[in-house]
Length: 210
Image 1 (cartoon, helix red, strand yellow):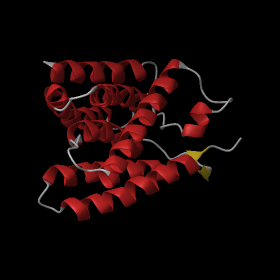
Image 2 (tube, one colour):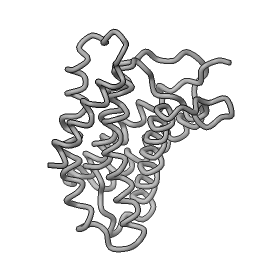
Image 3 (cartoon, helix red, strand yellow):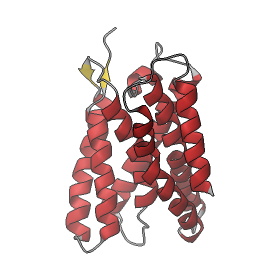
């Protein structure tokens, strides 16, 4: 049921985001690609939250990951239908940034995903014992942003420094985690693939001139 509800909300967000605009080529195929696997992984995430939450901190992190996994397909579907690229952190948080609700929701979801991913990566690097690996929630949130990246034109301008730093941390941490956990730990490999995908999205970010 949560999977079906998330898929319905995602398609509804795409319809709302594209109202009054010419639909991009293969829009509904893109929306299907954007939500199919994330919806399945979102259901998996909800099942693992109670089992993997043993303290206030773990409950907070797991619920935040689940909320981000739910929000990402919805906001990315609306952005994909509207042809709007992902805003850079600086453009969102700066004084001249776009303060409209849609832009804030899109940017806030991506910032939350980045912060949660960096925190998880650093935790697995420096203190990996007894840590759960939130591969389902992390990849459920990364996939919609990756599809949005492929579906929209890159903003011209200087490279976004905050995104570059986060991408470097995720890339280095992913390499270390794969080496440390070995290929026998498929959950760690899956998570590191999600880190790599997020790093690619971050490296594509540009700060629009002016």
